[in-house]
Length: 318
Image 1: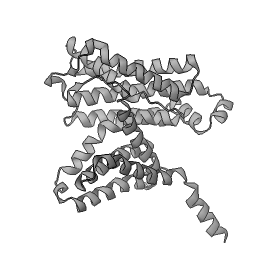
Image 2: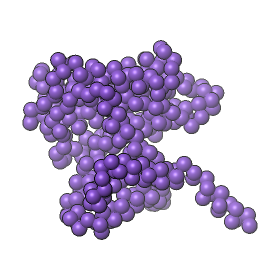
Image 3: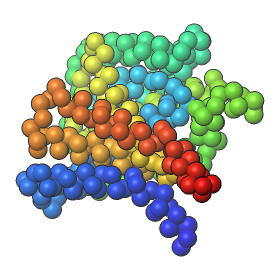
Image 4: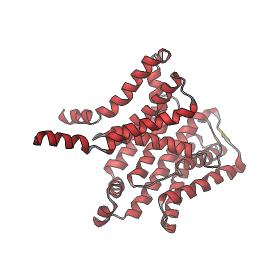
């Protein structure tokens, strides 16, 4: 019982933040006061959270992985076309998307290892390459799936897939050796290396895990929307930044709680802020500014947890 109480206490702030924001939306926008609005928000946050979990591993290792969005688009196009052309069904769509995402992660990791350049430069270069490939693979034809493939947005499959992805992220981040290596390198690379952890290997493993979750997201998103199209001129950065935003907000409100759960709450915050700005008729050009300000404010709590403890110690000493 005490363990359950500690879990609830540690995750309380991450739970309260989206709840308070949602109450604000209900007060501001009476049209949002429907019985299904909360469930719709929770459902819409599923897919962005899956991609954000991949970005979480990149941030955990100290990587800047800007190829995430291009990974998603390429995995969606290749996995979707192969599944539909070979009539492999929904399972083929999922497996094709995941394998393509993992392959992209492996290629990015190998480029980083061979060229020995910072992750930011390596991933930007791969972003351009993946976007170029997405434009000419399958003769540049956009992917339009048959309705029989469009199932991942429907209950209960969407909940089951999200729960499976949650368990996978939790196991990899908290229970598997790869998670310990990634977190150790992200916290202090020199200390991790002194304790026998290879920082380069950990960073490469993070890139592969980014590809894994990008592939899962590609399959889920494509299986919900039924389409995907190649992009260029770094357009895929929008997908990347959206995922990074969820991770930043989730990290800011996580505290001592479960980061996997907190990132889902961060994704909920993004969805609720979008709804709130639509209710207030905020111009589109200002919406990103508002979201960025919220990210900064919430990150302040996560970036300086020592401030509150320092004040308590000072009061006790006095």
